[in-house]
Image 1: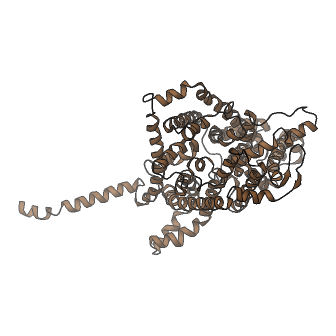
Image 2: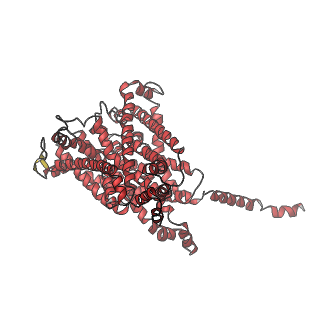
Image 3: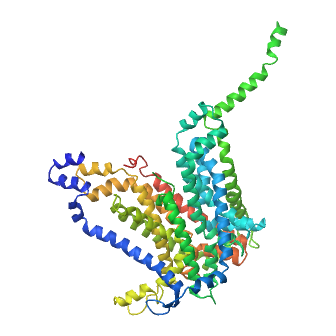
Length: 297
Length: 310
């Protein structure tokens, strides 16, 4: 409708009107800018692809010194990495830690996000700041005091210590993901259920829970991805038996010495593959922007 | 008379207090304080126990160094030129990296604000570097940009350089890793802010005869500015805390000896917890100072409606 109105305008507005509708004229005028945009993005993606491909190729190459491609291919680095870095145990520890963090942070933080979404009360702003702080303060900055405290209580190095440390950024993250989900559930639905005689338990299990399942899934997967990739906190608080895959990877690189870069890269590829699977699952449930911030829709 | 009056008055305090209590809970409930708030207690307790308590514990520990008095650890940090320089080196990495990430994201996401085929795929691919994690990114950068890596080989093939350009194990390597993991982050955030600005605003400006630059400069940019500030803050926090890549593709004993490495080495390599906590406190204070400055700037900007999503 607006486009029609514009077309009846003078010459300059005619062009603008068409521009807004995304007609060919605009593409011609914008060509250098569009080329530049796509060029920068393409350059970024080429570099990104190069970074990932190099690691993948190196992990299946026999030798790779000063050629474009490795000389000869082998899968033995994987079995070597598996036994050398004790990956079975590392993967089990990673699984235990991430699942525990997801479960505990969902259980603790979902009720809190319900309270925050449904009530406005004095001090709510202060509470929101308290919840935002662990996301704002760098993990290293609060990780060092936290590790010190965990050492004091003899929890550092254990699975419990790593789980506790990873809860710190996860709880705020669940709150920030869940609050918009809960806000969009009309409170009248709960009130209607109560009018019809439902008790608190029934409202929770029959009304709220089914409506919250998408939000819980999204928040859970996001926390899973973040905990899996969380390096600093796990690094500062883990011991030999409680390392996650990413920390084991870092230790392998940093104490490289006798280790071949190929078996380290094999481990890195395992990490990436796991992350890719998690990512594909995550993207089925959430919008990409949610992976990094609270939803703004 | 008095006895009769006393009779009904005897139980009076009881309903009185009950009414008082009811009134209090009622008054509280009117302001939003009722039993629903109890739901927030476990989460708040967990954060207090796992975040506030360790932080305050670290703060008081930082005032109890082995020697040097109350402020000994802080004095030691600022007296050591190597440690002091880490502040400058952190900012020298964090500010350019954040500016590059935010600066490149604005034109690109502005260009791509409309729907087009494959947009969801593009966004999905952009998530990849975020999920790769810093360790794998650093490992890949070391091999891709290394002296015998593909990047230098391509430069050589194109005749752009005769000898390999040193891109890793120095400042450039860390900057590259910060851009690779930080640019998608900034892009996705700015993209979500841009898609929250209703297209009708720009259409209205176009109706009034504004060309694309005027529409961007006077309509979109002011509406986007608060989002830009937030993105800058979040990107800055990420780059300010650069740690694994500064160790792996940087020069941790030289030009990329950032403050997080200084704090880590003090706490977990020299086991000087007081010094490590002091370094962490300095780091937090610097970062909060930047965030407060940016937020103060942000509060002076327009914060009204952006028209919502169309």
